[in-house]
Image (cartoon, rainbow, N blue to C red):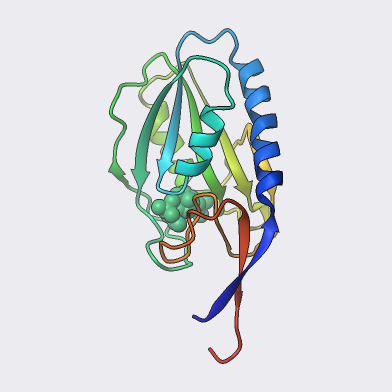
Amino acid sequence: MKHTIEVMISEQDVQARVKELGKQITEHYKDSENLVMVGLLRGSFVFMADLARAIELPHEVDFMTASSYGNTMESSRDVRILKDLDDDIKGKDVLLIEDIIDTGNTLNKVCEILALREPNSIRICTLLDKPERREVKVDVAWIGFEIPDEFVVGVGIDYAQKYRHLPFIGKVVPQDGE
Ligand code: PRP
Ligand code: MN
Ligand code: MG
């Protein structure tokens, strides 16, 4: 599909919001003994790296991969774990990091799976949220930005595996003739 990318949220606004989230999260977990940030690959990697450096507390990092949309724009309701965490989370405070929540199916399933491992707590922080698209309920503790139902890229988010490196959130705009 021929398209262009328009800036929706500037790099400066993204970074300012990451700092604010970092402060709130630091305050929330200040007495935690065992905090682990869990990033859902691949989309979370940029936000996770920025946020980890804005959280002024010792913490572990770990990653998992849930089955993905692949290269389409369609959500799949059959969510499976493709790559599991490296470490056990029993007794830990798990901070799940996502780049974007759309239907909610991915996080709903991931939370269900992780809860069985008896962590001390699970909370979610997402950079972007598209509430209009929600199909299943997900409790989200920290949201960077609520956005309308537009296809977006950047700060880890891809379109057909491209554009994850963009430092701003861009909107994919289809061009005529396609
Ligand atoms: C995207 C995004 C979230 C998920 C959100 O990942 O990064 O993980 O979809 O959608 P949902 O709320 O409808 O479940 P994707 O499957 O595209 O994989 P990626 O992170 O590797 O790009
Ligand atoms: Mn993802
Ligand atoms: Mg994706």
